[in-house]
Structures are given as structure tokens and as C-alpha cells.
Length: 270
Image (cartoon, rainbow, N blue to C red; front, top):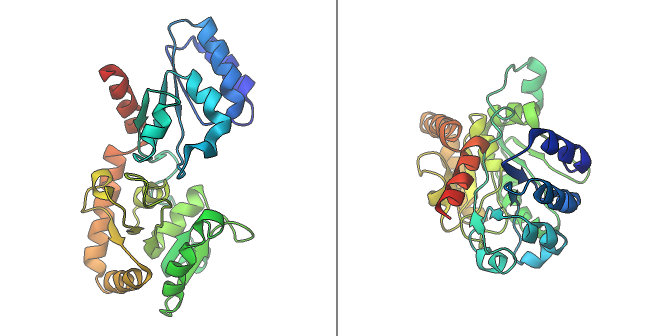
């Protein structure tokens, strides 16, 4: 839809939809209007899977969000702001794209040489994420085998390569942004759990209302991160048990299919 919104519209017209669930793509604004005009009973929804401190960051999407019947966001703090744009705004946490993120199909000797490490992190350390340097520096100072994958000249990592990285990292650092935005974490947690990895996430209020306590562990500061990394590297069996529980839980409860079902439940109640 992001690249060819007209193709999405053509498919929708052929399908004659009762429900349209679209991404945060500005080019879809007029296509959604055309679908609503053509299919009078169709319900339209948008899911913005990212967050910011202020909703004005998404001002270019306001016409699309206002035009949709329902609007879903992955944090709880900005809901009051969003309800001024679309009263039918609800919390819908991120989820797992399970047809892509799972345990690796195969791991070669080359994969082991490339990805095996004590600790890994994948993500940006620029812009609004500069504070991540303090946490990652604490890991570097530990003298462990540490690998970083990210943006801006550092190789990005997705799909099956991400699965291999997760599988071959003893501890996977997650560091979702905007810890003050209520119940919010990034998709990276789901990718880690989905590939059978052990995840350490930056604590935020409400995280254990998103994930059960037995599937993910948290840290609160750079010093606490270093302490937790050392602890979990020294407790292999317990760490693997948490990773196994996370794998089972996310595939059974938090795929995109489950999230769509959650969205439908909101609509039925509304």
C-alpha cells in the first residue's frame, strides 16, 4: 500500500470489502474516501504502529485518521490527544508477523561466525534514540562478545537474518523508545520472542500488562542492564526456560492475527 496505493484500491474494489484495515500511509487518504463512497457499509480502520510524545508529529496523517471509522495506536498515553482527531481511537499493541519471524530454518557455519555472540542489539542510536548510547556503552565496557545491528551505515537486519541473529545471541537487548508513553513497546520484542530468543527490555510502567512476567525480563538503567546481562549469562538453563516460554506465548497469543481479533472485539463492543 505504501508504494502502490492504487493497486490496493483495485484489490479492495474486486474484493468488495466489509472491513478495510490500512497502514499509516498518507497516499491512502483519498483511496479510503473512494472505498467508503463506493461501499457504503464498509468499515475502515487505520493502525499506526509507532508512537511519539506529541501526536502533532503525525499531522500529515490527520485527514486519513479522521476519515477512518476506527484508529488504533500502540501506546496508552497519547489516546486522549488522539481522541480529539478520531473519537474511536483505541490501544492495539504491536504483534508478531509470524509467517516471517520464527526460529531459523537453517543455521550454517557462516551464520555462526557472523552472528554468534553473548549480547546483541538491533536498532537506531540517533535522533530521539541518542540516549541508547549510555546503555550500549555499559555493555561494551563489560568486555563481552557484543554485536550491533542498526541504521546509518551499520547493516540493518530483518526477516530470516534477524531470526538467525536472535537465535545465535545469548542475550538480546531490546530498548523500546518513549518509556513514558504508557503501555508501549516496539515490534522488536515480538521478533525476539518469535525467533526463540531471550529478551531484556527497558522497563516501563505497564509492560507486564503487555507481556506475562515469565516471558521477558527488564532493566532500569545502564548499570542495571550490565548487572542483568551478567546474571543471565551465568544462568543458562533459567534463561533458556524464559526464552522457550516467550516463544510459546507470542505465537499462541500475540501474532498480527490475534491483534486483528483484538481490534474486531473493540468494534463489536463499540
